[in-house]
Length: 306
Image 1 (tube, helix red, strand yellow):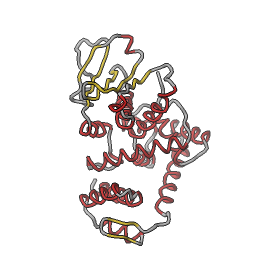
Image 2 (spheres, rainbow, N blue to C red):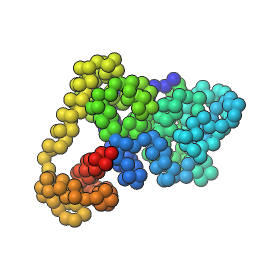
Image 3 (cartoon, rainbow, N blue to C red):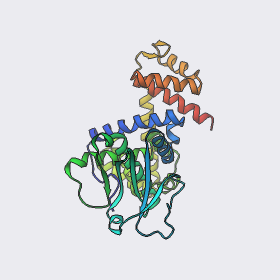
Image 4 (tube, one colour):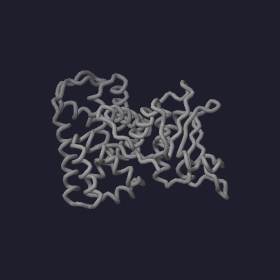
């Protein structure tokens, strides 16, 4: 069976995919009014069903009840019997069909893999111009993709991995002393998928050497206390550095704010609804600095209400 993010990509490629994923996560967070650290795959599915005319079909070759196994995941999904050869070749597929986007999902897989495949197919839908190009994407268990499709498959794999566990959620889980297996159980992710997610985080975002990042993940998987503490310290150091970056004047919806603390105070005095309005202003004015400050304050307010 194909591994998640089975191809190693360079940091430029990963960073581009990370930016694509983060912009989508921001949209989902704003529309559904959920902090990034609390977004679930089910929320992402709801977001896409609100945005697109999607028909989900779960398929299997032998199902005596002729029904969808995971009804809670996508309540309006339909079931389809297919030839047995398809079961062994394809985990999912996405293509335009009679004015809708049809997404096929192989329901013989374990639930974590089904969730990943759904996110993978939704990435094709969102980023790869299905309707415009009349393109069909099929996710294989094995075999070689044509060269022209590999960049699309790399993007869908990387972005789906980030959507499964957004960076804010990953950092929260890793700094709460949860074990590797505990995190897998909490977010219903496979061990392979979580390993790749943490490895990519340490290598591409924290910028550790690849071998060092790989060894650190393996030690963390084995419940090594020193590895757990080191990952936590790396995350804290990264986030402290981010908050101490030199502040430049920022234009808000109510004018220019020159001072960092003044800007923070301005945002702290806003209600949740006012923050969402300010976020929309920042997004449409392409004010990335203001967007990040708003999301930090939004997340702080959400957590304080827990």
